[in-house]
Length: 150
Image 1 (cartoon, rainbow, N blue to C red):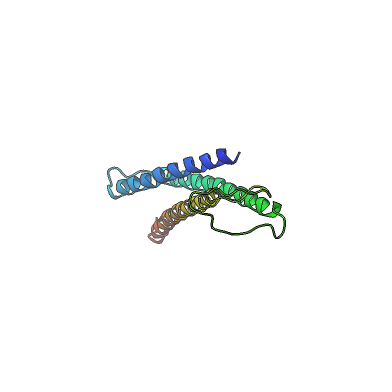
Image 2: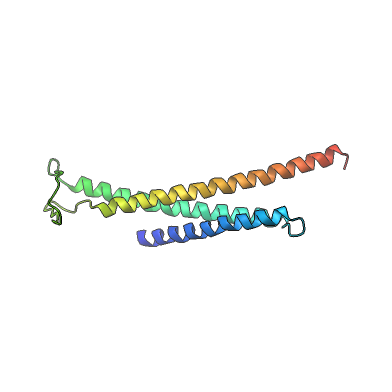
């Protein structure tokens, strides 16, 4: 299950990278009055990006919590006082008779999940900022119309 969620997180992250590039295309269209997309189209596009970022963030958080739980269980399964930290000779294998050990790949997996969460958080913040800007510009425009008596 963890591997499926990890791949889901990577797919969501890849899609959000593409979707952020899509935001730049929308920005180019907004500057040209002849190609300007509708408000509904831009808002829908921002909501798609926001939903994808949130889904990716949830997947990354579940993977990270799963990995932290597994590492905690591994550490708690070692009898008290049995854990030692030492530097083996280069190329040597570490064998543990007391149970599984924590290997560097465990930490790399955890770091990858945290990095994915950070990337998804940036995508969420960008989408929310753009949605805020659209709603502010629309409310200011409506206020000007009502002030003019329209």
